[in-house]
Amino acid sequence: MSSLFSEITIKNIKIKNRIVMPPMVCFGWAGDDGIVTEKHLKHYEARAKGGVGLIIVEATCIRKNGRNTNSQLGIWSDEHISGLKAIAERCHKYEAKVLVQINHGGFKTHKSVSEDIVAPSDYNDGTFSARMMTIEELHEIQNDYAKAAIKVKQAGMDGVELHGAHGFLISQFMSPVTNKRTDEYGGSIDNRMRFAAEIIEKVKGEVGNDFIIEYRMGGNEPSLENGITIAKRLESLGIDILHVSAGISDGSVPQVPEGFQYNWIVYSGTEIKKHVSIPVIVVNDIRTPERAAYLVENDMADFTAMGKGLLVDPEWAKKAKEGMNVTTCLKCSRCLWFTNGESCPRYAK
Image 1 (tube, rainbow, N blue to C red):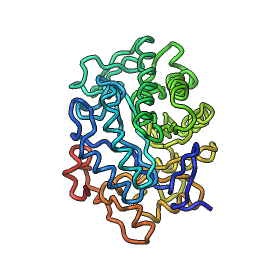
Image 2: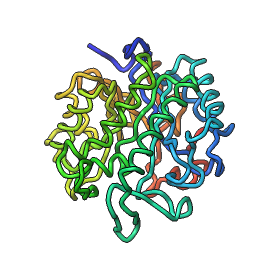
Image 3: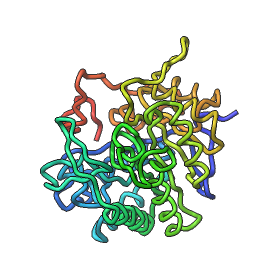
Image 4: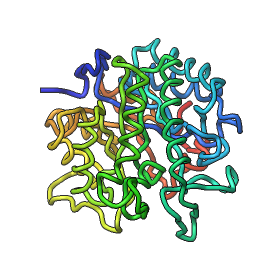
């Protein structure tokens, strides 16, 4: 039986436990250049020192004109490599393995970042608007994902996470709610997956066999049934780890069975795990060591991601292993991390 502190090996990369720091953007920390700052270095090093097995660096954009904010980290230039390398070195010092999440905002690109915002198809919901990208633009962006993965490897990271959840570009292609294309990239589920499938193929062709390719997916894209189909296809495409979160739904969410002690996002991950043989990370409101351990010990997940828990307590993993009480998130009605993390009353530097 696996435990929260069991080792697991993926592509000859040994991960010391099943505790994951998920990607959480440090808003306002980087400048317009998207380069890692000393704040980032201290932030990730503290969580590595605190015992986390796998750290996923926050959403890092493959194109300057595809960012969600003007302060988002970047991976569009060789100038970004040294900062990411410094993160890798500081985390490896404590035997934590490190991936970088790479993404493009699609229609979620902020208006201050670009006046020409692109998406799979024309989009306007009153908050976000974008025009349909051409096939040529689509292929250029796919190539940018592959180039970004190369830079992540050059930085000495252990792998890359493709951000296919939370309504960003890959998620926008995946969901029929936002993908209205009538060419080979829209319509059927196979066509909607084509954008991601071709990115995966390009990345695999560049990074070799000693580099983890993880995919963060929406379990509801737009339904759990579709999510399971997508997960099985991603496994067949060579994805090494699935990180199941939320996608673009049709207005409904998966129904959690009576007695299930976690929310629908965690439930989606546990259901997807039943249909694939590759490791699955579950995430969202797990918080305590007991809740995290239960999921791994009962073979409902291979990893548990601890977001806000690790923001407020960098030593969450060490304390959990030693049976000590962890600092808990206050569950503010509006999470301050998503405006300015340092204003969080319990954020631990």
